[in-house]
Length: 481
View 1 (tube, one colour):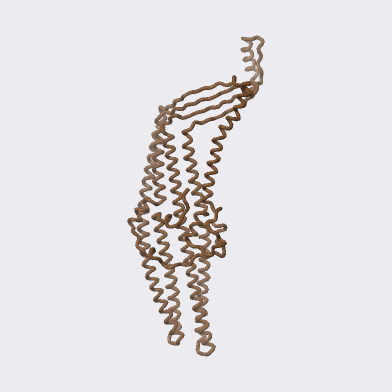
View 2 (cartoon, rainbow, N blue to C red):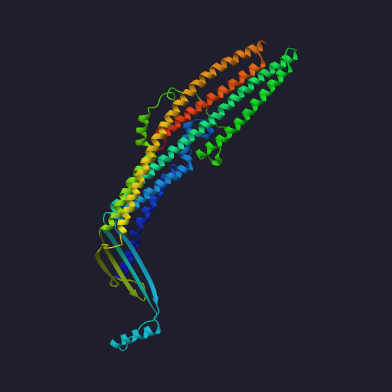
């Protein structure tokens, strides 16, 4: 009956031991679900119903499907698991062990043991070989470890915050890359439209020149001139279409789309005129203050310093003793593994360990951690100086780009009027062909310069918002894990 009651308790023990394993599995499922939230499996846009992709939609798709961002999200989950690992040290540990051995004594050892047994009982015998079985259940609980657990938990929490900041920084840089790539593609798209307009203008002039030649009032040189100009515009259009296609491949890669390709029916939005906000003057001092509070890479560095400070205290824990409470249920049996209650004993103990000398190991660990903290503090100072300089440079670039846009837009209006007047004069027989060619060339150049200035202005704003960290608030982003 005693043996039966013990075997009945073993399934219950297995259930107790299975609970932590089940908990770990649930935590793993939760972490996987959290990372899946950032995976590209959930489409951020209905491609079948989308013909024009704007920048906001492109950013949303990238934040869902970019593999690099998914990797950063996985690192956050790793940091969360490390927090759970550090927290587990506050709980007791329960270990179950079992072993079985078949012992075959040497002939000399057998004879010695047999002689000793027969010294007390002449009829005694010793079984050889013989099976031995051991089983034990041990509980250990660390009561004090010099505050190592406390600061290990703090270090893990700071590491989690640092990983979360790193994820935000990855989002910041990804949004910036998507925006810059999108504007570059828009520039190529605008140059395609300019080249098409130039091609259409020369085609119209070519048709008029051919008509005049047929009635004897026009020269063949005019026909050939407009044919050449038309071909040049077509060549420019083909080159810009190539640039646009290449830009789309780069943009699609940032969005995490399969084969780095947008659907064939999807086009980008055309370049819109500048807005009053884009022409406003940024307040450099306010932007620098905002960057100090909101830039994720600065926050990551600050959390890293706090984590290193906790590691200094972890190193100091070696100066304190460790106290462990342990209890065990131990059983040993020969011949068969049919353990009964009489085969088991128990033990409860409190152990204290205190290192008296380790060759300066603990002090060296403390010094190492302190110097690591100094290193991170200096890197943070360097990062702040660099961020301040970059923001001031970006503000200056925005101001320059604003001036360029105003000048180029005015220039386009003037050149457009000039071209129209020269065209009328040429059609009326009062203007030269050379002057018309120059006027048309000046117009396409001015239009291209305006598109370049407008894209430059928007890229300058993206760069400024990236360097201040405001780009995370400018575009809609999913919540951080």
